[in-house]
Image (tube, rainbow, N blue to C red; front, top):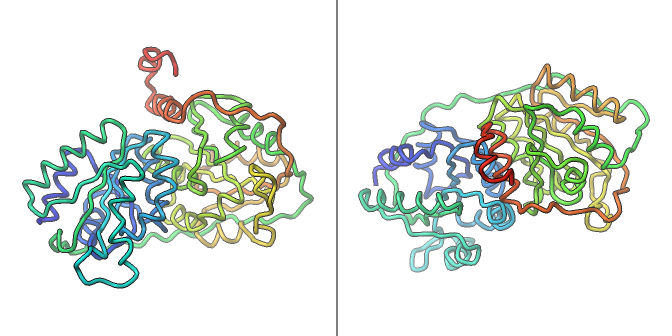
Amino acid sequence: MDTKLLGEELKKLGYTFFSGVPCSFLKNLINYAINECDYVAAANEGDAVAIASGAYVGGKKSVVLMQNSGLTNAVSPLTSLNYPFLIPLLGFVSLRGEPGIPDEPQHELMGQITTQMLDLMDVEWQYLSKDFEEAKKQLIQADEHIARNRPFFFVVKKGTFDKVQLRNQQTSIHLNQIRQHAYADHQMPTRYDALSAINSVKDGNTVQLATTGKTGRELYEIEDADNNLYMVGSMGCISSLGLGLALSQPSKDIVVIDGDGSLLMRMGSLATNAYYHPANMIHILLDNNAHESTGGQSTVSHSIDFIDIAASCGYTNSVHVHSLEELQTFLQEWKVNKGLTFVLLKISKNSKDQLARPHMKPHEVKERLQRFIHNDPLKDKEVGGS
């Protein structure tokens, strides 16, 4: 099939934002996306799903591209982010290890179970036709399904796309400018107090994304606001979601609130965030060296220098703050100066007793945030502000 023609059909349907991980079966479609569209190269397939999901929340119809071996990495966000939040994506997944076609041994099992996995995840799918006219019809069907807020994946067999030459790519190199390690005693506030301090600095241009577990639940108790999103599941994906949203909404201030257990799970996201470098995103790590939401089990963050890691990845600023006052002051300064920023605050393991859960469904939280982002008060009024 003429890859460029298919790409133009995708554009006509509004799909201009792509994120993925390379696969030889998809390389020509990936090359087209890099050449002609907004493409974010993710560190792994789960991150790609989260990045594309963030872009969708920000108003972009988004595409994810991955090898079927990487579909296993994307299971967590597809089932616990896209499914409950009703975030639809168009996916292209290769069929390495197709039964009856010689391939490498590591693809044998995935070739047998790729479509079964999609079925189990309640993801609608079709084999992508190699005939362009038929593929056009399939794209329209997929777009209609996505309009109903569910992902749709095409399973791509070997030899589907013809060659697209990758143009010379301009390498994105960003150097850390401010690196500040700990130099004073830690105040060690509770997470609740840290979130209260963060929330106190927000304004009408701020979007706050809170990671999985007690972080989102405590922010909800502090103030349930239109500009908040409380992550459920998809642990480790919060900053990738933030990256997609920041790139699609450059006029908004995107505040990503992370935890050490979450960040450790997908630490490659730091490199991707820094490479694409949205100046309107600040990444706050509340580190208590524990999986506190699940009983206080220790993480492995005790000897990790997150400040150096974020700085070496290319965050403009990578700063350790020691107290709530220092955190508030830094946030106020960031809103003026901007630049992709990583902030670390050590917190205690204490959390609020009898912590509530959001009464809204995840997709209602997402829809409310979308109305906030797109400044649509009339629509908000029509649906009763849900």
